Image 1 (spheres, rainbow, N blue to C red):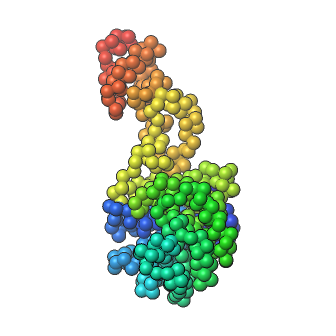
Image 2 (image 1 turned 135 degrees about the vertical axis):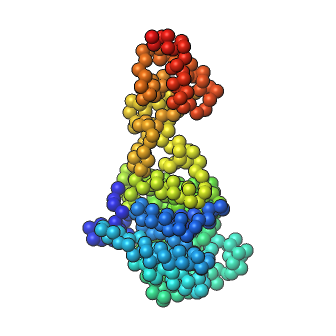
Image 3 (image 1 turned 90 degrees about the vertical axis):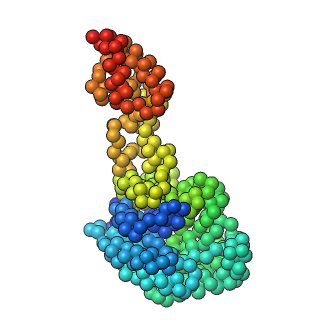
Length: 418
């Protein structure tokens, strides 16, 4: 795993064909999740934490949405967008704007103080959106999009990103045509969005491959993807995009976002860290994964969106074991049932092996726990204690240390010990 610097031997990582840049939209799309509104201070705290992670782009918000949002994006651009560390790392600061001069101007006013500002504007390209939402023809959409990209560049913004809303339900020929026109207009990054999360991984990968093969000038820009999780496939689709040649991925911490959420930063980054070399053609990111757990906790607390216990990578059960078979393996060698080390994401367990005693636990786990509590029983005593424990665990979910001590203090057990 590379360090979080945007430079490798003096060269911009974005020029490395194996480097996957992380575009974090927790502060914009993530906050659009129902009930996830955060204060300006909370969003600033998260932005500082994203710097510790080493994300390449922070989408700070929607400057035209309100005066408060404008001032927050401006503050992030000023403070975080100019803080270059000893390795030369400074994140690109991005703001979102619809395809209007007013919103693009407002966006630029907030962003222009950063060392590496980026305007991300967007328009829908599917027939259903153009007909029912925009009430525009294909020709009008092309004209609007290209003129606004050119306008954003004319303001002095060197990095203009264009996202194609509902790209996965758009006509492929039209999609490639408008992408080519937008590239000619000056866009430096184009983003294929699975806005409603309707694609399966194979078809999303095919769409990305089609775009790469049929869009004029595509080789001169960064190709990105933005996947929603309506079918539970945002991570899988994003990885399919990477396999097809995408080198910038939109993610949020904990996968929060509109409706069912977005591709999860922790899932994408750890998938690349664990399998990037052997399965994904050698791709890598610049994320310092040891800050994942702390960042996840912060976003969970500030957004109020509680994680499901079995959430991959950061859920409370991700590194816990209650089944006897698994506990036995973990006690012998952690790699038997832990493909990812909790230390890799900065998670320090209360106990070394993450064992939780319950009705499915076995003798090995009980013995190990009793040793932690200071009891070293002979096998005959342990066997009796085990069946008493199983009886208790059958009617009680959370077994505490005091419960186990109470078992030991049982008269029959004490007689055997004596």
